[in-house]
Image (cartoon, rainbow, N blue to C red; front, side):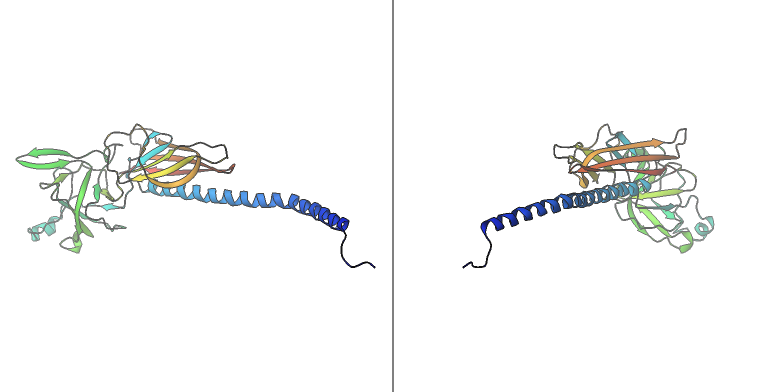
Length: 304
């Protein structure tokens, strides 16, 4: 009498057939699974590179004119602005004759000033301690410290960049949208800006940012197919008057990892004025032998 069940041979046959079927299924599924993860990695790397390039592009668009400096192809320096506008270039003679105690505040570049009227609306109001920049026509002007002058027993400073004391309203709305007063402690007898570019334009730089350096460090690829480099953003380290000769090595904010290669090229327009330029940026990110290479370009307005 035979009881119901499977013999050992039947079990072995089932195991063999199941193994064959599993191997066939795995053979077809593995490329699809690998392709999914490869696509996922490429999408992540693309998003990382795109975000980093757009962040750099935003700072380039907002940079102080003629402030981009490039020691080599692995880094570049600039000074992002926080706002800007137009200042009064001549006194309001009608107002001044009627209100000698609270005159208008022009800036004509021929003498020191303690305040100036802003004629145009500003996208954001500067804060105490921020920097006012006027007429930066050479690459190092905005980075250099002001020069102290003593005339008639009074000390004042000459330069392109001065610290802001306060921002308030002028005595009357007809004089402008606001009035910027310079730091009275730093410049007790006033600050003299250059004659300025036509149009009476100025920009403001946030003291919380100051100059900014973008740089790549440790670029390459390891044995596992991963990029070894990192893209950094360094800020609030001051203003260095000397043109940089090398990329920074200080700790900084990480913008992108897995960097296999990066390349930054700044091309100012040729000629005496160099009123515009172009920054070309390339990032190559690699993870698990999957690479993405993104190229981004940004025009530079060098008209102060």
